[in-house]
Image (tube, rainbow, N blue to C red):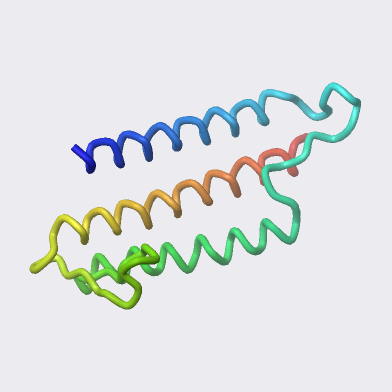
Length: 118
């Protein structure tokens, strides 16, 4: 039951993040105060989010190839979950990493769409 709630909340948060990005894209070139519509992140945040997204994407690919993923949580630092021994924890951590990559990638996409409007 706890796993179901965890995945349902992750999907709900992803849906809210999607709606927030679509709201920003629908605003147009200028907002209600006649100022340029800001992106999700600024230039420094864009570089930082891009770097973190690339690192996490590499971690996802590494976990898929090697069949092991390090624990993402604070309470199990240093622990490595393998697909053979801990399949449930492996897929939960892999799902979380993939979700972070998709969320950051969507933030970068929305920001680029806003910056390069015609």
